[in-house]
Image (cartoon, rainbow, N blue to C red; front, side, top):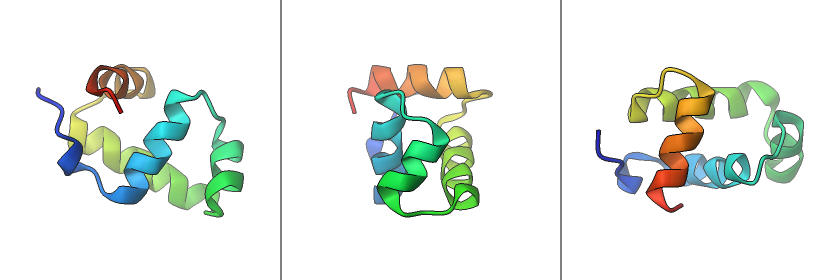
Length: 67
């Protein structure tokens, strides 16, 4: 599957950047001001859009994308 940055909304791209910096869920919430359940929903949406079965695969896809 080819990664298309356009498939992600702006907030997902922001959260992806934090994931790539190895931020914890708590740290992402603190940086974005979002509730944990909202951040989790964005991560789930990214996984679905990119076809990632788990968070490790999601990170690999994000790294490969050059975000």
